[in-house]
Length: 124
Image 1 (cartoon, rainbow, N blue to C red):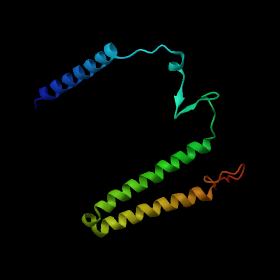
Image 2: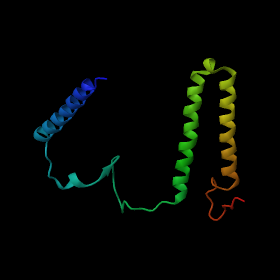
Image 3: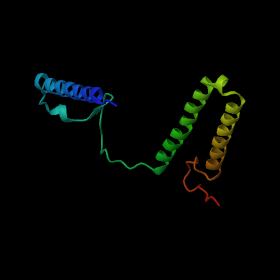
């Protein structure tokens, strides 16, 4: 196979990126104000330290969101191709939903979704 077109493309893209970075460095504005280096987010001045410790429960909820959000992505893809997949695709989607519901029931049972202090039970 000839990979020279890919190599030429990579070299051209690299040259374009370097040219854009160089031009922006040469022509770009430079600010030396005191407020330039301060963090500013969403129109609110920051207060306190950025190294605030969060409970692990926040990360647990974030993982639950990612897991169950992926469910929506897979089910949307299945809904788009439902006619092509037929009854076998329907059975697989139903099995997928049942596994996710069983997972949700398990998480609920062990108290992973309970935010009260000291209410988490040990799974046994």
